[in-house]
Length: 356
Ligand code: NAD
Image (cartoon, rainbow, N blue to C red):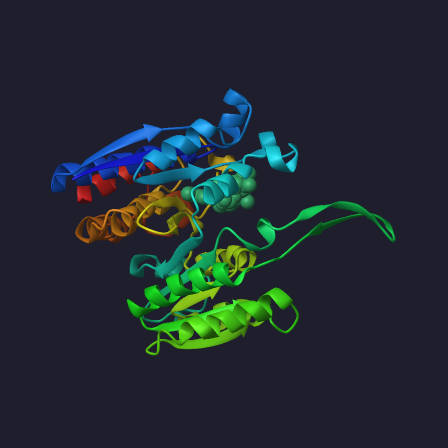
Protein backbone atom coordinates (compact mmCIF):
# COMPACT_ATOMS: atom_id res chain seq x y z
CA UNK A 1 0.00 0.00 0.00
CA UNK A 2 1.02 3.64 -0.52
CA UNK A 3 0.81 6.30 2.17
CA UNK A 4 1.76 9.97 2.22
CA UNK A 5 3.18 11.40 5.42
CA UNK A 6 3.85 15.08 6.15
CA UNK A 7 6.88 15.37 8.42
CA UNK A 8 7.43 18.43 10.60
CA UNK A 9 10.84 18.14 12.29
CA UNK A 10 10.45 21.54 14.01
CA UNK A 11 13.05 22.77 16.49
CA UNK A 12 15.66 21.53 18.96
CA UNK A 13 15.95 17.74 18.90
CA UNK A 14 13.00 17.53 16.45
CA UNK A 15 15.13 16.96 13.31
CA UNK A 16 17.29 14.32 15.11
CA UNK A 17 14.34 12.19 16.21
CA UNK A 18 12.32 12.54 13.00
CA UNK A 19 15.33 11.42 10.94
CA UNK A 20 15.50 8.15 12.87
CA UNK A 21 11.74 7.57 12.70
CA UNK A 22 11.73 7.99 8.93
CA UNK A 23 14.49 5.37 8.68
CA UNK A 24 12.45 2.94 10.79
CA UNK A 25 9.29 3.52 8.72
CA UNK A 26 11.28 3.03 5.51
CA UNK A 27 12.50 -0.29 6.87
CA UNK A 28 8.90 -1.30 7.67
CA UNK A 29 7.93 -0.35 4.11
CA UNK A 30 10.73 -2.49 2.71
CA UNK A 31 9.85 -5.46 4.92
CA UNK A 32 6.07 -5.41 4.39
CA UNK A 33 5.90 -4.02 0.84
CA UNK A 34 4.48 -0.54 1.56
CA UNK A 35 5.59 2.80 0.19
CA UNK A 36 5.72 5.76 2.53
CA UNK A 37 6.20 9.09 0.77
CA UNK A 38 7.43 11.82 3.11
CA UNK A 39 6.98 15.54 2.52
CA UNK A 40 8.99 17.63 4.93
CA UNK A 41 7.48 20.93 5.94
CA UNK A 42 7.99 23.85 8.34
CA UNK A 43 6.44 24.76 11.67
CA UNK A 44 7.58 26.28 14.95
CA UNK A 45 10.62 28.46 15.56
CA UNK A 46 12.30 27.44 12.30
CA UNK A 47 9.19 28.61 10.41
CA UNK A 48 9.30 31.95 12.27
CA UNK A 49 12.94 32.34 11.24
CA UNK A 50 12.45 31.30 7.62
CA UNK A 51 9.02 32.65 6.69
CA UNK A 52 7.99 34.89 9.58
CA UNK A 53 5.17 32.86 11.15
CA UNK A 54 5.00 29.69 13.28
CA UNK A 55 2.45 27.89 11.10
CA UNK A 56 2.54 28.85 7.42
CA UNK A 57 -0.60 28.11 5.40
CA UNK A 58 1.54 25.98 3.07
CA UNK A 59 2.31 23.64 5.98
CA UNK A 60 -1.37 23.22 6.83
CA UNK A 61 -2.13 22.53 3.16
CA UNK A 62 0.58 19.86 2.93
CA UNK A 63 -0.73 18.23 6.11
CA UNK A 64 -4.31 18.24 4.85
CA UNK A 65 -3.23 16.55 1.61
CA UNK A 66 -1.35 13.81 3.48
CA UNK A 67 -2.63 10.61 5.06
CA UNK A 68 -0.98 11.47 8.39
CA UNK A 69 1.43 13.91 10.01
CA UNK A 70 4.59 13.09 11.95
CA UNK A 71 5.82 15.92 14.19
CA UNK A 72 9.06 16.28 16.16
CA UNK A 73 8.78 19.20 18.57
CA UNK A 74 8.68 22.98 18.46
CA UNK A 75 9.98 25.80 20.62
CA UNK A 76 13.16 26.95 22.29
CA UNK A 77 14.72 29.79 24.26
CA UNK A 78 15.41 31.79 21.10
CA UNK A 79 11.68 32.49 20.71
CA UNK A 80 10.67 32.60 24.39
CA UNK A 81 10.20 36.36 24.46
CA UNK A 82 8.00 36.49 21.37
CA UNK A 83 4.38 37.56 21.96
CA UNK A 84 1.88 34.71 22.51
CA UNK A 85 0.45 34.47 19.00
CA UNK A 86 3.90 34.55 17.38
CA UNK A 87 5.50 31.86 19.51
CA UNK A 88 6.46 28.45 18.07
CA UNK A 89 3.92 26.67 20.31
CA UNK A 90 1.20 28.53 18.44
CA UNK A 91 1.92 26.11 15.58
CA UNK A 92 0.79 23.16 17.70
CA UNK A 93 -2.51 24.76 18.59
CA UNK A 94 -2.96 25.83 14.96
CA UNK A 95 -2.27 22.33 13.65
CA UNK A 96 -4.68 20.73 16.13
CA UNK A 97 -7.37 23.27 15.34
CA UNK A 98 -6.70 23.43 11.57
CA UNK A 99 -6.69 19.67 11.20
CA UNK A 100 -9.61 19.27 13.64
CA UNK A 101 -7.71 16.89 15.87
CA UNK A 102 -9.83 16.85 18.98
CA UNK A 103 -8.65 13.65 20.69
CA UNK A 104 -5.18 13.15 22.09
CA UNK A 105 -4.19 9.62 23.03
CA UNK A 106 -1.24 9.29 25.36
CA UNK A 107 -0.41 5.78 26.42
CA UNK A 108 1.77 5.45 29.52
CA UNK A 109 3.43 2.09 29.37
CA UNK A 110 6.12 0.86 31.71
CA UNK A 111 8.42 -1.36 29.70
CA UNK A 112 9.69 -4.34 31.64
CA UNK A 113 13.40 -3.70 30.79
CA UNK A 114 12.96 -0.11 32.07
CA UNK A 115 11.21 -0.90 35.30
CA UNK A 116 14.18 0.41 37.29
CA UNK A 117 13.65 3.84 35.73
CA UNK A 118 10.24 4.06 37.36
CA UNK A 119 10.21 6.69 40.07
CA UNK A 120 7.73 4.79 42.25
CA UNK A 121 8.31 1.97 44.74
CA UNK A 122 8.61 -1.31 42.77
CA UNK A 123 5.58 -2.88 44.51
CA UNK A 124 3.35 -0.10 43.16
CA UNK A 125 4.06 -1.06 39.54
CA UNK A 126 4.63 -4.78 40.04
CA UNK A 127 3.60 -6.63 36.86
CA UNK A 128 3.82 -3.52 34.68
CA UNK A 129 1.77 -0.46 34.03
CA UNK A 130 -0.40 0.26 31.03
CA UNK A 131 -2.77 3.19 31.05
CA UNK A 132 -4.13 5.49 28.38
CA UNK A 133 -4.80 9.17 28.89
CA UNK A 134 -7.47 10.47 26.50
CA UNK A 135 -7.19 14.23 26.50
CA UNK A 136 -9.57 16.67 24.82
CA UNK A 137 -7.43 18.75 22.51
CA UNK A 138 -9.25 21.56 20.75
CA UNK A 139 -11.43 23.06 23.45
CA UNK A 140 -11.26 24.34 26.98
CA UNK A 141 -9.04 27.02 28.39
CA UNK A 142 -6.29 26.78 25.74
CA UNK A 143 -8.80 27.91 23.13
CA UNK A 144 -11.21 30.00 25.22
CA UNK A 145 -11.48 33.76 25.30
CA UNK A 146 -8.49 35.45 26.88
CA UNK A 147 -7.22 38.92 27.36
CA UNK A 148 -6.04 41.75 29.54
CA UNK A 149 -8.23 44.34 31.18
CA UNK A 150 -8.26 46.89 33.93
CA UNK A 151 -9.57 45.34 37.11
CA UNK A 152 -10.13 46.62 40.64
CA UNK A 153 -6.40 46.38 41.41
CA UNK A 154 -5.05 47.50 38.05
CA UNK A 155 -4.13 45.36 35.05
CA UNK A 156 -5.37 41.79 35.14
CA UNK A 157 -5.32 38.85 32.71
CA UNK A 158 -7.92 36.17 32.16
CA UNK A 159 -8.41 32.86 30.29
CA UNK A 160 -11.71 31.06 29.88
CA UNK A 161 -12.53 27.38 30.27
CA UNK A 162 -15.57 26.62 28.10
CA UNK A 163 -16.85 23.28 26.78
CA UNK A 164 -19.87 22.50 24.61
CA UNK A 165 -21.92 19.34 24.96
CA UNK A 166 -20.83 18.24 21.52
CA UNK A 167 -17.14 18.62 22.32
CA UNK A 168 -17.53 16.54 25.47
CA UNK A 169 -19.62 13.89 23.75
CA UNK A 170 -17.16 13.21 20.95
CA UNK A 171 -14.10 12.94 23.22
CA UNK A 172 -16.04 10.73 25.66
CA UNK A 173 -16.95 8.42 22.78
CA UNK A 174 -13.28 8.10 21.83
CA UNK A 175 -12.42 7.17 25.44
CA UNK A 176 -15.19 4.60 25.70
CA UNK A 177 -14.35 3.09 22.30
CA UNK A 178 -10.73 2.66 23.41
CA UNK A 179 -11.81 1.22 26.77
CA UNK A 180 -13.86 -1.40 24.90
CA UNK A 181 -10.60 -2.66 23.34
CA UNK A 182 -8.81 -2.62 26.69
CA UNK A 183 -9.87 -3.35 30.26
CA UNK A 184 -13.29 -1.65 29.89
CA UNK A 185 -12.77 0.96 32.59
CA UNK A 186 -12.96 4.74 32.18
CA UNK A 187 -12.06 7.29 34.86
CA UNK A 188 -13.32 10.74 33.95
CA UNK A 189 -11.39 13.56 35.59
CA UNK A 190 -12.82 17.01 36.28
CA UNK A 191 -13.19 19.64 38.97
CA UNK A 192 -16.98 19.45 39.24
CA UNK A 193 -16.97 20.56 42.87
CA UNK A 194 -15.97 24.04 41.66
CA UNK A 195 -16.15 24.53 37.90
CA UNK A 196 -19.42 24.84 35.99
CA UNK A 197 -17.72 23.56 32.82
CA UNK A 198 -16.78 20.44 34.80
CA UNK A 199 -20.38 19.91 35.92
CA UNK A 200 -21.48 19.82 32.29
CA UNK A 201 -18.51 17.57 31.50
CA UNK A 202 -19.58 15.07 34.16
CA UNK A 203 -23.24 15.08 33.09
CA UNK A 204 -22.41 14.52 29.42
CA UNK A 205 -19.90 11.74 30.19
CA UNK A 206 -22.63 10.00 32.25
CA UNK A 207 -24.96 10.23 29.24
CA UNK A 208 -22.37 8.80 26.82
CA UNK A 209 -21.62 5.99 29.29
CA UNK A 210 -25.17 4.69 28.84
CA UNK A 211 -24.22 3.69 25.28
CA UNK A 212 -21.42 1.52 26.70
CA UNK A 213 -23.03 -0.65 29.39
CA UNK A 214 -20.00 -2.95 29.51
CA UNK A 215 -17.64 -0.14 30.47
CA UNK A 216 -17.28 0.77 34.13
CA UNK A 217 -17.21 4.54 34.65
CA UNK A 218 -16.04 6.46 37.68
CA UNK A 219 -15.22 10.12 38.29
CA UNK A 220 -12.34 11.75 40.11
CA UNK A 221 -11.54 15.36 40.90
CA UNK A 222 -8.31 16.38 39.25
CA UNK A 223 -6.47 17.00 42.53
CA UNK A 224 -7.35 13.52 43.75
CA UNK A 225 -6.47 12.02 40.36
CA UNK A 226 -3.00 13.54 40.47
CA UNK A 227 -2.48 11.94 43.91
CA UNK A 228 -3.92 8.58 42.87
CA UNK A 229 -1.59 8.44 39.87
CA UNK A 230 1.43 8.26 42.14
CA UNK A 231 -0.27 6.37 44.98
CA UNK A 232 -1.70 3.51 42.93
CA UNK A 233 -1.37 3.99 39.16
CA UNK A 234 -2.38 0.43 38.39
CA UNK A 235 -5.98 1.19 39.35
CA UNK A 236 -6.41 3.06 36.04
CA UNK A 237 -7.22 1.84 32.54
CA UNK A 238 -8.45 4.81 30.47
CA UNK A 239 -8.29 8.33 31.91
CA UNK A 240 -10.62 10.76 30.15
CA UNK A 241 -10.09 14.46 30.73
CA UNK A 242 -10.04 18.03 29.49
CA UNK A 243 -7.33 19.80 27.55
CA UNK A 244 -5.51 21.44 30.48
CA UNK A 245 -5.96 18.66 33.05
CA UNK A 246 -4.86 16.15 30.41
CA UNK A 247 -1.78 18.21 29.59
CA UNK A 248 -0.66 18.05 33.22
CA UNK A 249 -1.76 14.51 34.13
CA UNK A 250 -0.23 12.92 31.05
CA UNK A 251 3.15 14.40 31.97
CA UNK A 252 2.75 13.02 35.47
CA UNK A 253 1.83 9.60 34.07
CA UNK A 254 4.85 9.75 31.78
CA UNK A 255 7.22 10.46 34.65
CA UNK A 256 5.99 7.37 36.47
CA UNK A 257 7.11 5.29 33.51
CA UNK A 258 10.63 6.61 33.88
CA UNK A 259 11.31 8.72 30.85
CA UNK A 260 9.54 11.37 28.90
CA UNK A 261 11.72 10.25 25.99
CA UNK A 262 9.77 6.96 25.71
CA UNK A 263 6.19 8.15 25.30
CA UNK A 264 4.38 8.54 22.00
CA UNK A 265 1.07 10.23 21.32
CA UNK A 266 -1.63 10.36 18.69
CA UNK A 267 -3.98 13.21 17.93
CA UNK A 268 -7.05 12.09 16.07
CA UNK A 269 -10.09 13.67 14.48
CA UNK A 270 -13.00 12.00 12.79
CA UNK A 271 -11.90 9.30 10.35
CA UNK A 272 -8.41 7.87 10.12
CA UNK A 273 -6.34 11.05 9.72
CA UNK A 274 -4.04 11.77 12.64
CA UNK A 275 -0.97 13.64 13.81
CA UNK A 276 1.69 11.69 15.71
CA UNK A 277 4.33 13.14 17.98
CA UNK A 278 6.33 12.37 21.08
CA UNK A 279 4.94 13.95 24.24
CA UNK A 280 8.22 15.63 25.11
CA UNK A 281 9.30 19.04 23.90
CA UNK A 282 12.24 20.19 21.82
CA UNK A 283 14.81 19.61 24.61
CA UNK A 284 17.03 22.55 23.58
CA UNK A 285 19.58 21.54 26.23
CA UNK A 286 20.58 18.47 24.21
CA UNK A 287 19.67 19.54 20.65
CA UNK A 288 22.06 18.57 17.88
CA UNK A 289 24.32 16.58 20.24
CA UNK A 290 23.20 13.08 19.25
CA UNK A 291 21.83 12.63 22.78
CA UNK A 292 18.06 12.64 22.26
CA UNK A 293 16.08 9.48 22.80
CA UNK A 294 14.29 8.83 19.47
CA UNK A 295 12.08 6.03 20.84
CA UNK A 296 9.03 8.17 21.71
CA UNK A 297 8.93 9.40 18.12
CA UNK A 298 9.58 5.95 16.67
CA UNK A 299 6.72 4.62 18.84
CA UNK A 300 4.57 7.51 17.59
CA UNK A 301 5.30 6.14 14.11
CA UNK A 302 3.97 2.78 15.32
CA UNK A 303 0.78 4.49 16.53
CA UNK A 304 0.45 6.08 13.10
CA UNK A 305 0.59 2.68 11.44
CA UNK A 306 -2.05 1.38 13.87
CA UNK A 307 -4.56 4.25 14.00
CA UNK A 308 -4.26 5.96 10.61
CA UNK A 309 -3.16 3.13 8.32
CA UNK A 310 -4.72 0.14 10.10
CA UNK A 311 -1.40 -1.71 9.90
CA UNK A 312 -1.50 -3.51 13.25
CA UNK A 313 1.13 -6.13 12.41
CA UNK A 314 3.57 -3.45 11.24
CA UNK A 315 2.90 -1.33 14.36
CA UNK A 316 3.59 -4.31 16.60
CA UNK A 317 6.80 -5.02 14.68
CA UNK A 318 8.12 -1.57 15.62
CA UNK A 319 7.01 -1.91 19.26
CA UNK A 320 8.61 -5.33 19.56
CA UNK A 321 11.83 -4.04 17.96
CA UNK A 322 11.98 -1.27 20.58
CA UNK A 323 11.46 -3.76 23.42
CA UNK A 324 14.14 -6.01 21.90
CA UNK A 325 16.68 -3.16 21.76
CA UNK A 326 15.95 -2.34 25.41
CA UNK A 327 16.32 -6.01 26.36
CA UNK A 328 19.70 -6.02 24.63
CA UNK A 329 20.71 -3.35 27.15
CA UNK A 330 20.97 -0.30 24.88
CA UNK A 331 19.99 3.03 26.44
CA UNK A 332 20.11 6.71 25.57
CA UNK A 333 21.32 9.02 28.35
CA UNK A 334 17.84 9.83 29.70
CA UNK A 335 17.08 6.15 30.48
CA UNK A 336 20.63 5.05 31.25
CA UNK A 337 21.22 2.87 34.31
CA UNK A 338 24.16 0.93 35.73
CA UNK A 339 25.40 -1.98 33.62
CA UNK A 340 23.65 -0.82 30.43
CA UNK A 341 25.24 0.32 27.15
CA UNK A 342 24.82 4.02 26.46
CA UNK A 343 24.22 5.01 22.83
CA UNK A 344 23.31 8.19 20.95
CA UNK A 345 20.26 9.08 18.87
CA UNK A 346 21.60 7.71 15.60
CA UNK A 347 22.80 4.42 17.03
CA UNK A 348 19.48 3.90 18.83
CA UNK A 349 17.60 4.46 15.57
CA UNK A 350 19.91 2.08 13.73
CA UNK A 351 19.39 -0.62 16.38
CA UNK A 352 15.62 -0.38 16.00
CA UNK A 353 15.97 -0.63 12.21
CA UNK A 354 18.13 -3.74 12.61
CA UNK A 355 15.59 -5.32 14.97
CA UNK A 356 12.72 -4.61 12.59
P1 NAD B 1 11.24 19.16 27.14
O1 NAD B 1 10.34 17.98 27.07
O2 NAD B 1 11.76 19.68 25.87
O3 NAD B 1 12.50 18.81 28.08
C1 NAD B 1 12.37 18.46 29.44
C2 NAD B 1 13.60 17.64 29.87
O4 NAD B 1 13.51 16.33 29.31
C3 NAD B 1 14.91 18.22 29.36
O5 NAD B 1 15.92 17.99 30.33
C4 NAD B 1 15.23 17.42 28.12
O6 NAD B 1 16.59 17.29 27.83
C5 NAD B 1 14.61 16.05 28.47
N1 NAD B 1 14.12 15.38 27.26
C6 NAD B 1 12.99 15.68 26.58
N2 NAD B 1 12.87 14.86 25.52
C7 NAD B 1 13.94 14.05 25.52
C8 NAD B 1 14.38 13.01 24.67
N3 NAD B 1 13.70 12.63 23.59
N4 NAD B 1 15.54 12.39 24.97
C9 NAD B 1 16.24 12.74 26.07
N5 NAD B 1 15.88 13.71 26.91
C10 NAD B 1 14.73 14.37 26.65
O7 NAD B 1 10.43 20.28 27.95
P2 NAD B 1 10.83 21.79 28.26
O8 NAD B 1 12.28 21.89 28.59
O9 NAD B 1 9.82 22.25 29.22
O10 NAD B 1 10.56 22.57 26.92
C11 NAD B 1 11.56 22.89 25.94
C12 NAD B 1 10.88 23.55 24.76
O11 NAD B 1 9.98 22.62 24.13
C13 NAD B 1 10.04 24.76 25.14
O12 NAD B 1 10.21 25.75 24.14
C14 NAD B 1 8.63 24.24 25.13
O13 NAD B 1 7.67 25.22 24.88
C15 NAD B 1 8.70 23.23 24.01
N6 NAD B 1 7.69 22.15 24.08
C16 NAD B 1 7.24 21.70 22.89
C17 NAD B 1 6.36 20.63 22.88
C18 NAD B 1 5.92 20.10 21.55
O14 NAD B 1 6.47 20.48 20.53
N7 NAD B 1 4.95 19.21 21.51
C19 NAD B 1 5.94 20.04 24.07
C20 NAD B 1 6.46 20.52 25.28
C21 NAD B 1 7.34 21.57 25.27
